[in-house]
Every structure is written in C-alpha cells, then in structure tokens.
Image (cartoon, rainbow, N blue to C red; front, side):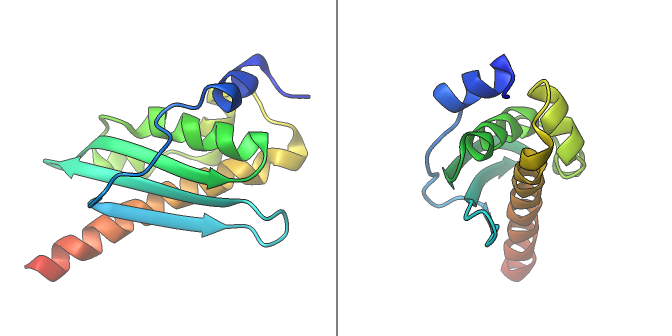
Length: 125
C-alpha cells in the first residue's frame, strides 16, 4: 500500500519538532480524517533556513510533513510556496489515492507558515 519512501519517512521523520519563536507558523487540519499539522519556519534573507513540523495523524500525514520540510529547506520563500501536493507525493514515490489529501495538508501548512511570516513582517514595519 505505501512506498518504501513513505514508510521510511513515517518510521524516521525528518525535522520533527517545534521551533521556539518561529518566524512563521502554519496549522491545518482535516475534520474528516482527523489529521492535524503544524509547520514552523525560520527565515533568513527570504530563505527558509529552519523548518520543523508537529503532526497528529496517519502514516501518510507524518511522511508528507517530513517530506515537505525537506523539499522546502534552504529554498527562497517564493519557490517553497510553489511546492504542490503532486511534488510531495512524487518525492515519496506515490501515495494511495485515499491518502492524497495528506499531501494537500502538508503543502497548505507550509503556505500558511509563509503567509504568517509575511504578515508578521508587515506588522513590524
């Protein structure tokens, strides 16, 4: 059902945890399946230098959270916010059709973290 890559990211998630005083935080949830994701980012000179996640959910939700942190780290904000659910699923060597919504959550959480960072930056000015 799951690819080896999904199982690897579920069993050994990358960048799991919380960033205290994060520059941006994005949280999303899916009431149907109960998955909840939170992405934390640290930004330096418009580049995501630090990124972590906290996820409560299934194996696919944890794997997609882990993968999106790897895809976004060290990328400019504009490039990171273009990461799609397809990019996440492809990087994990596929997801079962019933689990594709998990990759949507991961990319949505990242975009919300970036939007949160930008709104905080505007408020500081």
